[in-house]
Structures are given as C-alpha cells and as structure tokens.
Image 1 (spheres, rainbow over the protein chains, first blue to last red):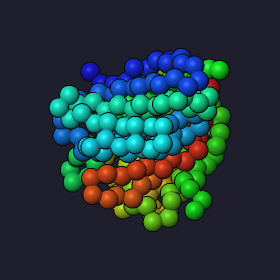
Image 2: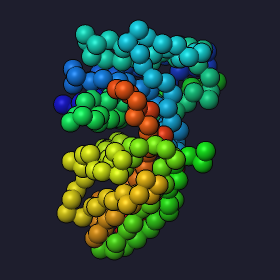
Image 3: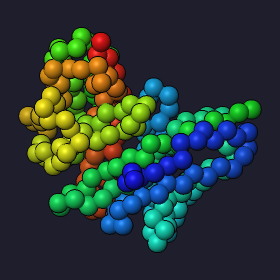
Image 4: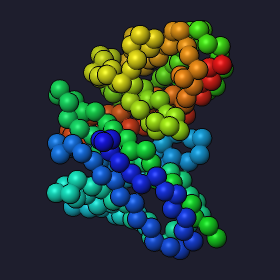
Length: 112
Length: 115
C-alpha cells in the first residue's frame, strides 16, 4: 500500500461546480500537510497548507482528519483555470528531520 | 527572488552516457530536494539535503545515481551510466525549515530523455 493515496480521476466538472478531493495517508505520525497544484508540463506549486482546524483561501477549503488519516480539498465555484492536477503532500518525521511524500495526484478538468 | 533554477531544461542523451543535472536553490533555504516524476510512478523523492548534508537518499538508485551539494547555492544530480528507464522529469525543490512544516518551492524541472 502506498503511503499517500489519491483518486487519480479525472474529475470532469462544469464551470461553477463544487468539487472535493480526498487524500489518505498511512503514517499516523505524519506532521504537516499541503496541497500543491501542477499544470501540464510545469512544476508543482504550493496551493495551500492544511491546518488541524481546517483553513480556507478564497474558493478553496482544506480539511484534516487525523483520526481517519485523510486530508481533503474543496473547490467552490470552479473556474476553467482550475483545471490541473492536485497533489497532496504529507511530511513525516524522520531522524530529527522530515520526509515529504507526494500522492500521485488527482486530475481536474473544468469545462464550459 | 529568482526562484529555484535548474539546468539544463531539456537533455537528450544516449544510453551509457553520463548526465549531470544542476540546481540553484532559493537563497537562504537550507533544504534541497531532488525528485523524479514519471507517468507510472508519479513524483518520487530521490534524495534531500539539509545544510548541504545528505539527510535521506533511500529513494536514489545508488549504483548509478549520485547527488552532491558542495555549497549552499548549488547541487548536482549525476547519472552514470544513463539508461532508457531514467527518462523522466527531474525536479529540484528548496525550502526553509520551520518547526514541523516546510513548504517546498520547485524549479521548472529538467526533462531527460535517454535513447
């Protein structure tokens, strides 16, 4: 079983729709969590951190459920420009430092 | 800030040749990561450094790959000899460590093709 798992999709939604992605992780000692966005043939870029209490940034809401070991990303009022692959990242403690593990990504396609 | 800089952006080489990928992290960042991304495997962590020291290289095939960070502003990832299965996009990323979290900033990547 992979340490970090995501539904690869693609999620195909119309403009204006609300869409949610989940990401599960297996290491219960994981410390910090992020969502990255990756456009085709580009590098991943940080979208938002995920805090224990949940956090919101405009149309984007991130949630963490430590008991069930998953994080989620909710996108409201989808735009065409939201089409991309969304990667979750889990940082786990290791020998005084941290090791990041990326999920395989979830593909989102927003159509007119 | 210029962001993370990688060179070359594209590399095409023949099997058996040596390949050297280069990375300049964001100034002041003390962590540097090398990743490989393929359609099959996604984004895989190969090796990472903290203050120029290797922290973990368990994801790196050590028979042919080597990574160095001779100073705080430069790192290399070398493949010798290269094989077709090494064809991938190689990303370098850097971050500042702060408590239990660090946000990584990625370079544009090097697209490697080994024929």
